[in-house]
Length: 332
Image (tube, rainbow, N blue to C red; front, side, top):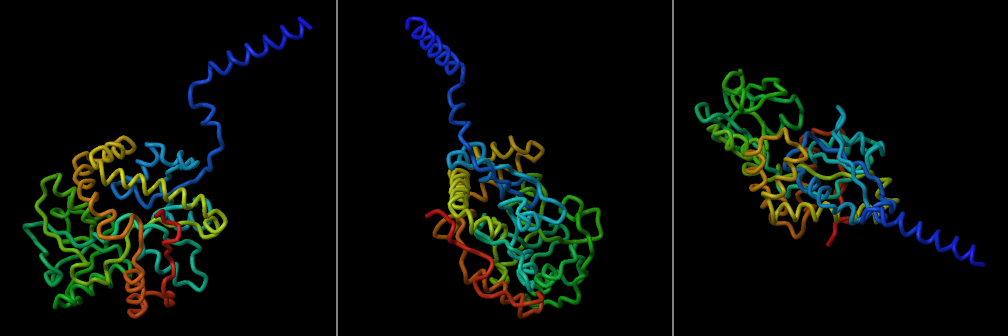
């Protein structure tokens, strides 16, 4: 009996010794986390800050998730999410439209808006300004060659009393304000939150107007988080947990823009620091803006843009009302 007791005692001591060597939190870390791949729409920028904050601050882990942030393939995030190779990703309402208008629509749904209003518009240099859409007459606009993009530009020019036929659409996919002075184009489509903030940070004199100020139809949602339909149907709890963590990340970025910017810069040190700080300070008021809560879609705004696309015959089929987005997974 003594030998058995001694054996048990030594075993207990050994176990206590082993567990004393395990760092605090390691046992918790071994708890199974649900792995999720999240694919960006582009290289890291301040549209994504809340995602990086959620990862750095452990908000995903709090929800039982292990999220990997990955760069998009050449055919973009929607293809990867639709295939199920990534559960969630980032895209835009305008670029999703052709895929939603197919006879068999792409099996993805927009489940949260990252920025509440469309901040895109036209930028030009101050010494060759395009102060308003009508001023694009006789100017060279650097185009990506996309039908919806060109139709939006033509619409705002016409709405401002100009002649869209007098705008020179010059194919130039890599256009930006930095090389504009040495190029053949006079203006380019940009996003205020990044490109205009970058111009400010680099002391470039510019002129800018926003599309939504000319036509409120163009106040569509860009960018948005999209999710794989099958995954979300089978895993609604995980989807809600994912968005709860993301929401917490963006709320932190709203309350602490400088600290959030530093988190983004640590994840993407190649970014220009001053641009990030200026952009983050601007976006803190734009993530939620006038919405009732973070991520929420206004169905009227969503539908209005797709109705315009159908009316202008810019998509093959009319997209049904309220199709392609959902507020159901958003945290209260």
